Image (tube, rainbow, N blue to C red):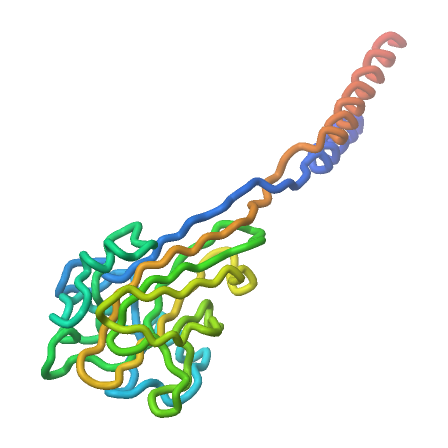
Length: 255
């Protein structure tokens, strides 16, 4: 019985002595297009194919985002002669931590003839390890043929960027294919979750080739909960052990 009591006291003291505190766990996440060799698949980016020569005509649904994440892989391509080259893009993009390349939903997306791509909703996943995300920002550099999203009724009804299926308002900046364009937001923390997240890019084709190149940095400020001993409860635990030891000593003296 005494052994059982001792074990119980130790167990209670051990459990009670474990508290929760937060350790800083800020992250800098770099994402880019062209994860692979030219002519091959992009290993990180999938897409939902859209219409030819116009944008998606209806507002994206959860099913659309799921289809984009699980869709076919984008193809890494060479640039059309009129486009900014990958080398020039990376030299001028502030977020080009890793060299980006052009991608399309067609192997001939950079050609001036034939099957040269269509509108597409691209998806790329990334992981956040923070359990508490207190602040976050996105800095997105891109070039695109033809537009990054559009709410013009003639060409589509969706924004250009989405985080976990939620539109980033103001991301229908259009853009172009012969220079670097930028979109920045510093208030995206509420849209992020611990674990897997997905960035979606709505490429709108309005005729001719269809492709994009991008490089982006997502920065988070947060913390990760970790278990640590509580000093005050450790003292209680020590006193409990001391009491058990004293009781055993007194008992032995009586024998």
